[in-house]
Length: 467
Image 1 (cartoon, rainbow, N blue to C red):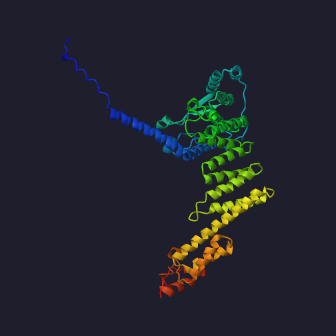
Image 2 (image 1 turned 30 degrees about the horizontal axis):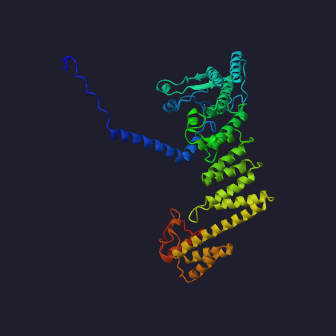
Image 3 (image 1 turned 45 degrees about the vertical axis):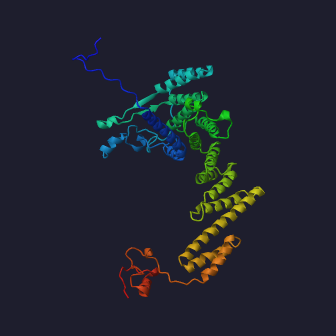
């Protein structure tokens, strides 16, 4: 057979050589770097992602709806025609002031929906959980209506979002589907379904059951995220892909579920336990400021909870540990002092060991205050401000005579007494805009004397008196 090229056919392309081994290695290295970076970010950016997720969580704080705004047009139509305001499509809405007020949704008889829910429930009793989940999903899809905005025209219609309206039967199907997903061990899907229920039907009659179920999911995830938990309860990779555990940030997702528990039923029996677990988790991660905030929330929002005393002691410890030294802010120390006083007042019958610890903590706070005052006095001493340094050094033995800083302050007072006294002029930045500069206005004593022309010592006339 001839191998010559036919004049009417293009030449056969040469087979493409395989990529060099070095190129394949570089590609594999890039993929490995991406995976390593993703894992590193999942651990390092967990707190940032957690905060962002809570801020954007629609089940905790639902955004303003079109009915509440009174303008049901999409955002592009409102941008192009802001002066045109659409009329309220539902004047009897219970969400708008001046309507017929809030009322319970009316359950209209629907034999077909009742039969479908009953049939799905029978599948659950028979143990066919997969079939029951599919049946509830079919009911949910059948009893929802997509509503398109009639005012969206032209380009705005392309960006108009279709709103979904569901009836009472869809609410029941949503709850039962979430319960079946939890029974099947798909906790990620179950938690998402519970959140959809609470978002679309706030105040549903299943609130107590949803809160209990989400609390159980959070406990399962927290135990699995604990490195000291038994091996059989820790999260395995296969379980992550099956939906029992989230793929990334298991602990962060558990804390997000606990936030749902405390927000969905803020006065329920699990709210104080949820906020305590959130605070303990931040404390274990050494996020002491975040932990102190949640401990204080428990004390403020649940004053009758049996966990209040534990929360107050932990809050004091968190505030002490969040203090970074005399060169930083000391608000945490003052807050810890106030919390100690509240604890001593609220629990006078506390154990002797706790009392001793609180008094030792007060001594520690006083010692930190003495150190801060000593650092301030040293600063004035180094800058030649003998009067200010003498004031702060003398304050230490007067307020904290038993502190070790009191002895050091007395030694420094002897040195400050031998320092020359310098006249310190007022700072220029203390002059009000438009007023006479007390330093350069008249020069020397004349300039300073010109300050007595108005109440408070400042001359607001705006004129330069001169020498």
